[in-house]
Length: 295
Image (tube, one colour):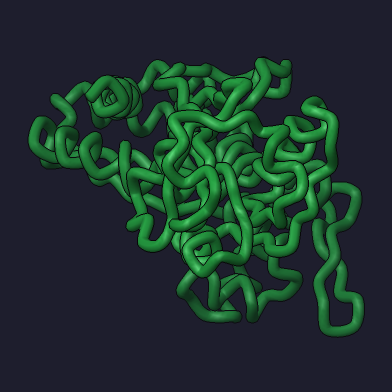
């Protein structure tokens, strides 16, 4: 019988490329990883890894096991967490993955409420932007992913989607800029400005919005770090658009926020897998994220 712990080790070996790297990732010894892979091959009745130089590569059987491992491990996690929840949420865990502005605004309030109501439930946080955060959810590396989207595309049709809020994008211009004191600014009036862009997904959407307004933005700087965006704008090096959540989470020294038209919005959501949606700890965390978004 194939054991879940062997599947977890196999996934790590496949991701890292070697027994020694997998051992470092898992916090164990290289011989322990080797022994578990031998046990897995005995259970499977066929080799799952072959050595290629200094790296380990999956056989066809190994690829099949890795492909099915995420669903198997997610189902087991759901079962374990639901059983723990039957004891009154005195045990269990919820692993969150969130984009940075969600981490600094929604997550603290939600986690504090969760800890107050269910102190035995452990909540952890890792930061990642979509689509990587969504990939982590599908791979079984978290129970909840905070994500955002600009269009209701079918990319999440296999997931449970909990809408949290609509986040409007606002413009940022340097203090002393011609539009620094404006109530609102048409994005087309910024066509000749140098631009500072954010994460790849936001960058792509910025280009689409500007092209719809009749121009292609000249992007001089691109950074995933929101304080860096504000710093570049504050230094007079360009203009930017940022989500309101991001503006709330940083100090806008040297920059002014202005409303841009036409209105550009993104939908902020919490995502989980259908199996995990039935786990009370996950449901409780989703409820607290929703409550934090309403404040």
